[in-house]
Image (cartoon, rainbow, N blue to C red):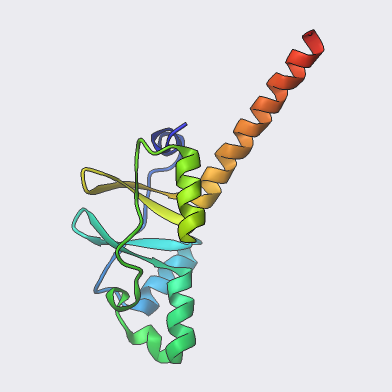
Length: 142
């Protein structure tokens, strides 16, 4: 299975921000929407990611004054992205290696969606359950 199939099965709404957004405003959006990351956009292009981790690091380093900074100053850039054709296991491996939990999905340099590690783990669990059921059926009929 690839990323395109995951995107087809879920809500396509992706909340974003831009470099000029304030950290406090972006943190408020993360909290209100109960999401862990925001792609930082310049038009249709993803130029970074602002995540809970970015927020934590800048607040730990600077205290409350970090909330007055812009997202562009504290975001993770360049963003780690995948394409629609990327396989689930390849995306999981990338997330593990790079220690990220969210990946923008791009097509022709333009963002078309966003996936989280939770999306990928859910698909992988469903695949494992399906394989186990097929094995049980095979054993019972053998």
